[in-house]
Length: 148
Figure 1 (tube, rainbow, N blue to C red):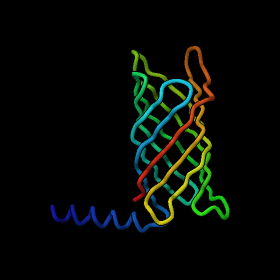
Figure 2 (cartoon, rainbow, N blue to C red):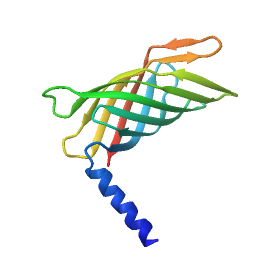
Figure 3 (cartoon, one colour):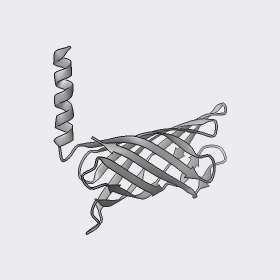
Figure 4 (cartoon, rainbow, N blue to C red):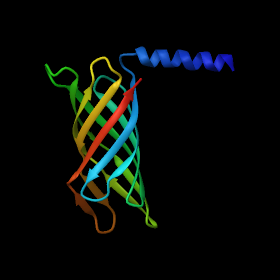
């Protein structure tokens, strides 16, 4: 048990001090045309410019699971403000069906100086893939995450 605890603490210090591996977890809000979705979100920076984000959101009698790849880059002289472009699949469960969406996104991400707080806002339209395919342009996302 002591070895597992020691390994877990060592792993936390490794990831906390690694420049190429940063993880943040918190709350995601997906809103706009249709139901407002709320749930946990986790984001991991694999390299300086490549991130993966996963969300589990709930709303409108449905549950949604999404996984996204994001390209992120800094904005010169902005003090912690980055832009990102991404895309990924999203599955919706509920109302007796499973729905498949493609979700591109374009947004801004801001890290509060030395504080471990990460804020994001993005535009994330939804392409429904299936019978009677549909496109919803007016969808947006907000994120509030704790970085570790």
